[in-house]
Length: 145
Image 1 (cartoon, rainbow, N blue to C red):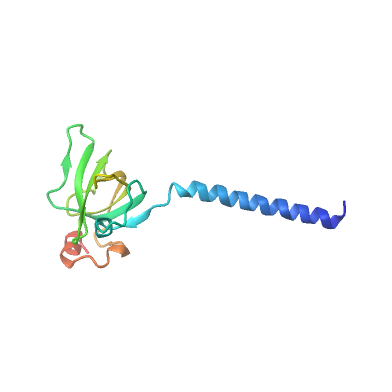
Image 2: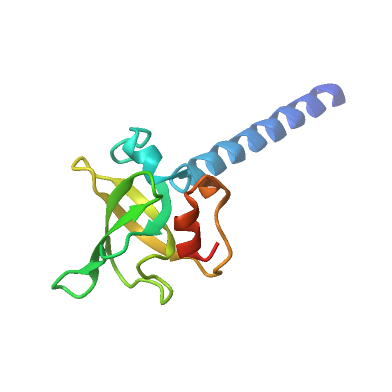
């Protein structure tokens, strides 16, 4: 076999290897990819049932309820324009409270409830996600923004 053919075969094998690694990487990230949605976007029909996503907003005042099992909570996430009921089973962060900012990873159920797999509480009183920039001023003030 000529050296030219050997180089061509080596280049094709290398290209196939890079393509295979890319496909494996993309399939691994597919389960981790999630769109950020606000309650207004969810209420507007931009969230599909079962689609992985992140829901960001404020915990509405008076909405936080703990169920009898001791680990399940229900609350309402709001952005001042719309609200979405959320259910989470697990341990919430220490900073998670009513009138505080939060981001939840999870999926919408067919009944309109967002089922969170993980909840993140806002850690800095002045931080506001860029997607929440058009939030009403009174909600920003409650969040410390």
